[in-house]
Length: 279
Ligand SMILES: O=C(O)CCC(=O)C(=O)O
Ligand SMILES: [Fe+2]
Image (tube, rainbow, N blue to C red; front, side, top):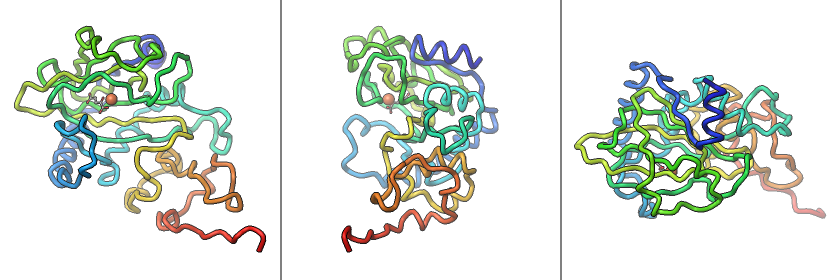
């Protein structure tokens, strides 16, 4: 499965890994998603992009429950795929068989109107080197009727931003609850409109190479009770082993080992005021 998935991502830009999660695990994820969505849906900035205003989003679910991280940290197949594409062999401070890529963003999402074709890699480029992948944990069956994801196979290598006229050629990615879909963030993708009364929740995580700025400042904001549930390797994946130093006196190389991890998140909030140079 691993080889097949890697080859599909290289060639088509995406792959579906069927039934990674048990029905009970999916149900727990869906219950938590719905509960947290109801509690937090009004807490969103009015600066939200127009692109996302009609759809249902659960932002930063990993600030709320560890389950939303576990979904992406536990499946070995996902870790193997991400290690293959995103690990930096020059990181060194973390053992080579452990991940050094980081979480770029994490959200729950269900469709409403059609979502235009777009890329999430910020820039298009043609190369075999990948720096961002997305993984969608499917919590409810996705169909053409309820606003499934669509992709243009091979478009990750187009070296261009998405062309909206391609939408009619987009392939619907119809999936079952429990599946995991992984795509190269350069792929042209979007969603169909949801023409049903129901939801089609998935949790989507983007993972990137360690040196890319994360969507939110996780290391300053992850609650202690979530931090306490993470292994060292998981802390590194949330970004705690690649925080930029305050200045050159504190440190220079952002590639940090597990030995630099703090016990309490409070330590990450405290900014040391450096001594002025020359005193
Ligand atoms: O919900 C989906 O299937 C895709 C969502 C998406 O592409 C995005 O939010 O950037
Ligand atoms: Fe996207």
